[in-house]
Structures are given as structure tokens and as C-alpha cells.
Length: 447
Image 1: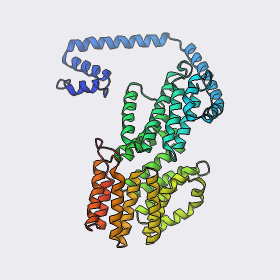
Image 2: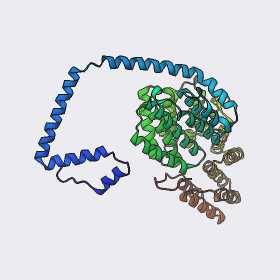
Image 3: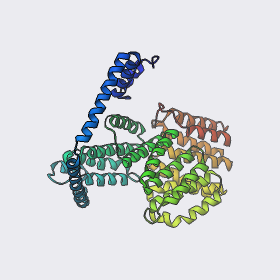
Image 4: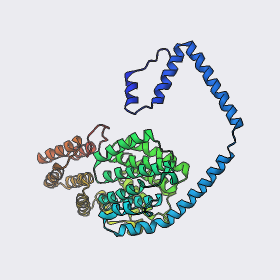
């Protein structure tokens, strides 16, 4: 201990909020006690006196009135939350009937309505529901949720519940930015949110699991796969402890998807097999389809195309029930991979082309580029170098007007150069694709 000294780095960490002032004071106190026997003896007397006083108070205190009061308050709060939950559907339905531009003004003018956590929850659910087909609309619901959250009665509902709802709203705002491809903005929101959580930590395990899952989605899109898996591991442990089957299935499916991106299809199948064992198809058919779809993708990664095709055939009735138009691009991509793997080139080209166009129409440029790599491979295998050249020109043209990460842009430029000089090979194409999909460092630019 005598050789440990306070450093400028430690002080800067406290100043920037990465360490708490309490850690600094504890370090200084330990250092002082190690160096000075008199200070150590005085502090020892002080702590023993505190302990004696604490024991005396424990013996004298009667906590029964406080416990009774807390029990009554908890019962009253539970009854109020149940009343709020019963009123919330009608309140939200009335609010959403009006034009979007009037929502916040109506919330501000209302005297008794739009003042409950249940309304915030309903608006959050509505925001999540728009992400797959109209992600930009999510911000209207999130703005309304924030307006309600800012007007909650903290004395009635408790500071912790009100704070947790505000945290959830900001986390879902960051997630909506991620879905729109605004990864810089999403990352900046997470930085602010984490700074807030250092000063006002969340203790609710369900919310902590949700936050870890949402942040993991951003790290996945940034191709920071080890960070994403670490966050999903945290969420998985919490969902297991809570015995939350739905949450666990989502996390295991996401872990399988990232394992695929890390070129670990065997590990992906393990995660998806466990997800399939936990999922309740009758209660959550959409979640069940997501597990089956990812399993088929993993089988393609392993070259088991016939098995993947049989798998797709078996889950077609489920897909017809639950798939939205926004899922069509990924289904077409999967069908293209199966057709290419079973040497049906014309069919594969059709599916890949449809998937690429749908991704471009949705503004999902990264996914469109990945389908482009699949198309380029198909053209090379069918000896059509001119088509590869034309395709790469289109891919570069699509990305030129966008802000792309340096290594993404470089991959596409190299692909174009190789195609133009007809030096492109399957091996080079695979290498450029690996470079395009490479995990990026935390300080790398994002899309």
C-alpha cells in the first residue's frame, strides 16, 4: 500500500464522471492510514464507535410503524396503477385519433388525463410497433411518451419509477435512430444515457436487461460484435433469473444472429436450438418465426442448403401468418441463398435482385450491399464478368452520396477496381466481403 500513489489519471477519471468521488476519498483514506499509525488508530476508534452506536439503535428501534406504513402505501400504489392500466387504452386511443401535430399540445392541456405510467407504456409499445415498417414515425410516439413522463406525479408514483420511464424513452429513441441508420446519433444518445445512469443508477432487473439488449443492437449494427455479445450475456443472465421466457428467446436469437456474423454458424445453431426450446409458438408466433428464419440462415452458412430449404417449407404456414411486408426483403434474400446453393442460378438472381431493391427502397444500404456481394458471387460462378462490373458501379453510385465508414467505402472501391480490370475472383470477392463486414474498433466512424 505504501507504494500506491494518487495519479492525475485517477483524478481526471473522477472529474469526467468515470469514477465516483467516493472511490477517490476511500483511496486517499486508505493511503493515509497505511502511512500514519496515529491516523490509523484514530480511524479505528471512530469506526468501532459507529458500530456500537448502530447496534444500540438497532436494539432500541421499533420498525413496525414504518413497515405498516410502507405496506399501506404499496397497496394504495398497486390499486392506483391498476386503475391507470384500465383507463390507459381509452386515453391513448383518444389521443392518437387526433393529428400527430396536436398530440403534445393535448397532453399539456389535459388536467387529469395522460398522467400515468400506463399511458407512457402504451405509447412506448406503439413506438416499438412502428420500427419494422415506418421507423421515422416512432419519434412521434416517443415525444408524446416523454411529454407524459415529464408530468407524472413523483410523490404519487415514486421518483424511481418516473426516472426509469424517462430512461426507457431515451433508450428507445436511440434504438429508433439505429434502425434509421443514424448510428452516430444513436451512439451519442447512449453516451448521454450512460452518464445519467452513473449518477442515477437503475436497479430494476427487467429494465437493466432491456437496456443491455437495446445497446447490444447498436453495437451489432456498428459491427462491434464482442461488445454486443457481452451486453447480451448480461441480459440473458437477468432474463434467466427472472424466468422471462419471451425476453430469453429474443436474446438467444440475437446472440445466434451475431454468432453468424462472427462466422460461427455452429454456435449460432446452439443458441437458436435453445431459443426454439423456450419459445411458445401459440402465444408468440412472430418470435417463433424469427427463431426458425435465423435457423435456416445458419444452415445456409454451413452449406446445408437442402436442409435449409426443407426448413423454410415447414415454417411457410407460420410465415404467412406473421410476416409483415417489411420482412419480405429478408425472406427473398434467404430464398436467393438457398437457390444459389442448390445451383438454381436464374431463380437465385431473381430473389437477390428483389431483396436488394427492397433494402434500397427502405434505405437499408448496408444490407443492400451484402446482397450485392451475393449477386456478384452468383455472376462470377455463372461466368458473367460484365454483370459484376455493372453491379459494382451501381453499388458505388448508391453509397457515394452517403456518409460511410472508411473501411466500407474502401471495400467497395476495391471491388469496383477489380471488376473494372476483370481481375475479380471468388477468393478476392470473399476477402473484400470479410473486410466489408469486419468488426470496427470503438473509435471508428459509423454509418
